[in-house]
Amino acid sequence: MANETGETWRRDDDNLEETLYGLTGQTESNKDIWFYDNRLKWYLIAIGKDPNSTESLNNFPDMIRLPKSWTRLLKEMVDDTKKDNHERYCSIATDNNNGRILLPLEYVKGAPTCVSGDVISDHKNTLKGLGADKIIGSIHTHPNKSGYRSLLKRFDRLYTGDFSAADLYISAKKDGELVAGVIDLSKEITFVFRTRGTKQEENFNYLPKGYRDQVSFEDYWYRSKNIEVDYEKRTATYLNNHNCSRDEFIDLRWDVNYEIAKKHNLAIYRGKLDTNLVRFYPPSWISSKETEWKKRLK
Image 1 (tube, rainbow, N blue to C red):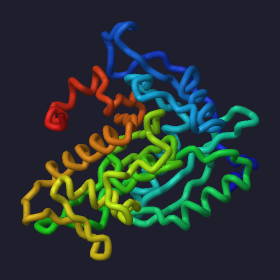
Image 2: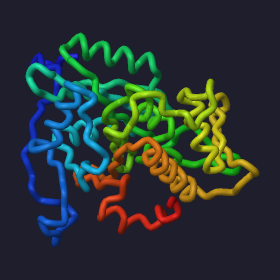
Image 3: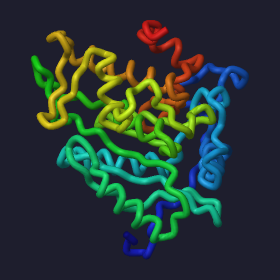
Image 4: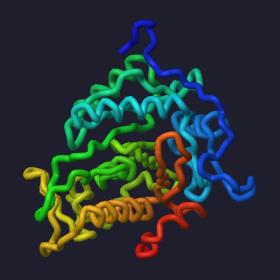
């Protein structure tokens, strides 16, 4: 996985930028942001050393700013996804001895709707063999055409820059990913962080025993929004033939993201490439003004 110069990992550097893009006119007293070099990097290194050192939900900032090395990676993954409409996947790792965040130069290719567990496992094992101490999370892309279709019409953009319920299962489950990101072809980004309130013991007690796996978890949350997914036929249909527009469907997915985060004490951030990511759950003073539809979730 080394390039022609013999390097394996992307350089863990960033030019610290103190400008809050898109938030001109805000004062220092009413904003709260984690830049990479002064907070985010060190937080990720800390949880890599001790997964139980996650912050409490209320201590996560209104915004986070990804470093340039991460945004370059995300852009490369999106550009490759555009070529064949297959997901791309990359692990986030730590080098605990040298206090570094490790992003590999190479990522892996999945299918149009997912990246298989075998591909992910091989990718993680390769990184550990190259010196990664701890895999703390991952980033993956969502193609525009997922391969799923509705009962009444095909959606060209069923998967967007949000997580699927199955994605969030990986963060909510016992010993789940500490941080994860997803980006779609419009370069809309969502990141999720486990918090101190995300329980390490069995936390799916609201699901029937024997139905607490990833598929059952996703089925439960989509059915709560009147959606049924058939994994063999790769279809998403609406219970009782409910006619739902594409935009309504996308809103339902964001509703599911919000409600899973609320149930499992996950911190979720949204934004576009090269902008600050704003906390979506719990709603920040910024996002609460911008997303009126969340009032329905109270």
